[in-house]
Length: 288
Image 1 (tube, rainbow, N blue to C red):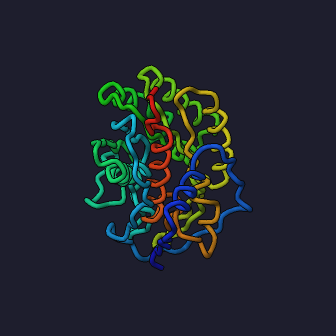
Image 2 (cartoon, helix red, strand yellow):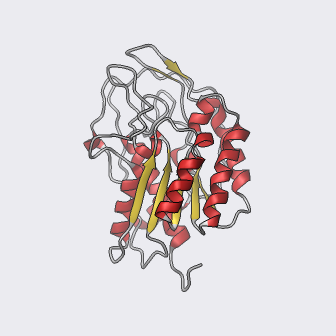
């Protein structure tokens, strides 16, 4: 069954209010129970199906223009749909077709539209299959080479899927935050959206996708981030909501594989991080 998306048209005031609720300060709600097994996905959506992210509205100016989006296949832009064979999650080169719904590119477009007098860079450094526990060396090299003013960090699901504990996964992310502090970079850390159990209709392969670990991981991440200077939680879980695994599946932010976003999900992810950048980097008389 093809993936569909609901494009809501709301007044700008309500839109900005909705975007603001996607930020830190909200406690994630636990799923009501184990996610059902998804057996859909017989049609692979094309990259042109990705909807436009919600507008950020005009911005007078932001105090940062250079951003590094760091993570795994979700940052890279792997689409959550099944092809005729089991999807390859571990391409380290992030070699997706042009026009694929990569959320860092969508974030850059949002910022550029909202503040056309500035020039923004949002580097996509997503590496499919990467674990946070093995990413420190790559992160360190990129921080030294790029010197970003802001970091968009969304990683850890591969650690959980490979049997790493929540504590070990969050500790690995904490090491990255410690390093970013040495470069005086502000870090926006995303919680993980609710993943789902899924079954590939072509191969029969079932993937738990650590669905039962998402809420504990997000809670531990929230605790770890609390009190750190220039580190802010971006509540992607709250933005996506807990109902994308149900039969109705709401607006289908999570793709058929239960692990990667759908085109609507990537658009939502971009809007959520874009709103966080707007809120944290807006120039209000002075800039830290």
